[in-house]
Image 1 (spheres, rainbow, N blue to C red):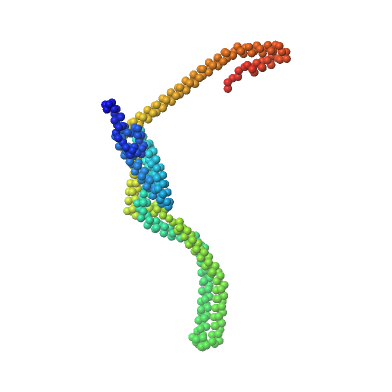
Image 2: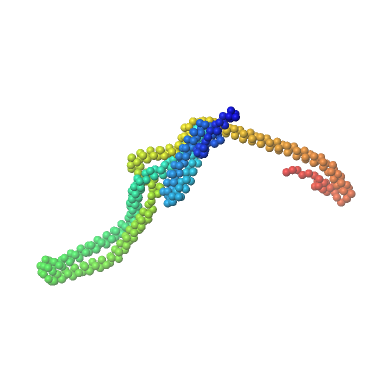
Length: 399
């Protein structure tokens, strides 16, 4: 009985487990065909391993990405698994589209590589954020401090014109008060010098000249105090306005600082600044980008580089077989429908012919009866008789 076993049955009898079937599924191989191809089993298992690696990598990177934008690790893991499944679907579609018929066609392969590069470049960003986590945190702190200074400078620019006008008003008032106070101080010094004998008169005590200078000093002092009281409300209003402006600036600054975060975009910007300012980091950054993008390109590269085998030939022949069978079945079904319609037409025509032949004698009898009635009744014209005959016995055309 062993001599009667065919070659295909011997090949299909080679043991394979669920793990191999899973790898074949990842590689988009048809199990019924691949299990009879001894050499291609291992090839498509390798392709399946590359797809599995890309799938796991995508799931991890997307999970880390969502952990930076959401506070729940459960949500991040679920979203990471979801996006990893999408990447898996895209990768399977890419490698399924690369067959022996289009492997040497430049445009389809270039399109698939461009799509894989786009996905890989984006997927590399979360991985790089994880690898440079400590350095990025330092750079984020530096960037946030720079943003605070820029925000404060922009606020000062917004309120600069109003503050300048208020400060100029305050400076003008203080200048007037300072000038008046200097006049009072000079008058006081003159009065004192006259009373202690160091003045121009040389007399000690409150004499006539000293009294005159005392009156001058008191008058200037009273004028100064009056002017000071007059300017006090205005100075208080200016100080209040300046305080309101400063409070507004501080409030806006506080609100702005509350918006500063350590999110994904902030970390990406910090990574870019870190790369642009540090040559050592830049070299390793680009090397890691290239490596991580190769991880995404692995399934496409593996499918392109691996040679064609018996499985590809079986797929081509099976597609030709199914196409031919579909076309032949369509032709047969069309022929059957046409034969059915033709047969139905012929039998319906015979039935119509028999109907008219069977009813011909009865129609003649009906006509004779109608004519006899016309003969017996004098009140009915021939036209009326013809109308009745036409209504009761003539056939209508089919519509």
